[in-house]
Length: 136
Image 1 (cartoon, rainbow, N blue to C red):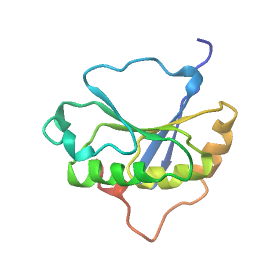
Image 2: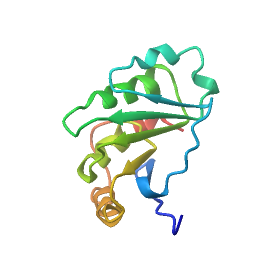
Image 3: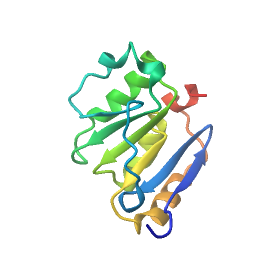
Image 4: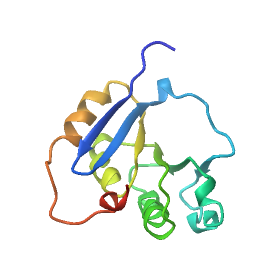
């Protein structure tokens, strides 16, 4: 593994860590869960406090079910660990991911990191409330 491609962005009270597929470490264990976009996150309610990270998969950019899963995990179940977006994560979706409570996102292409950082810094604040303001 060469250089690490990790960066974080802060917009308002929320921040999201940007990762690339090239620098991920296979650290899946009992405290990390991967959910497909059609899995019910409420099945985790009895062990949510024992989890460090939940990975939500975006199979393609037009499928937004992982946003609903993120909302349920953060607001209804009170998950405070790392909520990671995986799969087809596009730069222009990062602000919405951050606002829905994702704390990290895996970009497919390392060259997207600069574009992603610019996208996340585009707006200083928002009028509407979001899930991310309730994390902390």
